[in-house]
Length: 178
Figure (cartoon, one colour):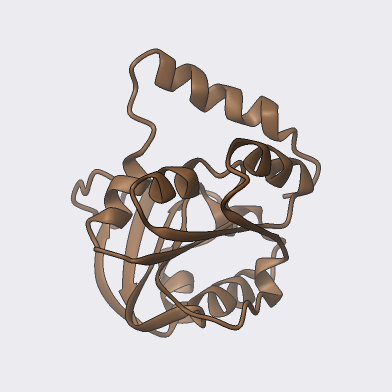
């Protein structure tokens, strides 16, 4: 995910919020799991991480794109932002929830999906959750994702609002427990 203009990307969400749209569905979902700590893997401009921190969660945001992280850092300098490749990530700690919101696996080069998922999953504390939401019509399936996670699937939804999922859906939010 290199070469993005973080400020330009963030303007889209700011405009949606200004128009009265709820842009915090992912944060609402994560909060329902009751975490004290969250790794926002592929955090982009920090929209999810910033909202979680506002709600009292200890958050670390990680992204490979310096432009996206520059926006995140300018919006919330008190949060720990780490520039790193998720396919090799090792923060030396675990979290109650690791969330991959916003199609994170789809921004990973082909052939690196399993490494991305495995390195994110190793940051989940015992009893914690790995949560990922992504499009299924772009060459990466839930079966491939589930195999790479190597954790128990708790639930799967078609939206962050917990709409029921079916194999014909083109989006999935998957919840796995360590």
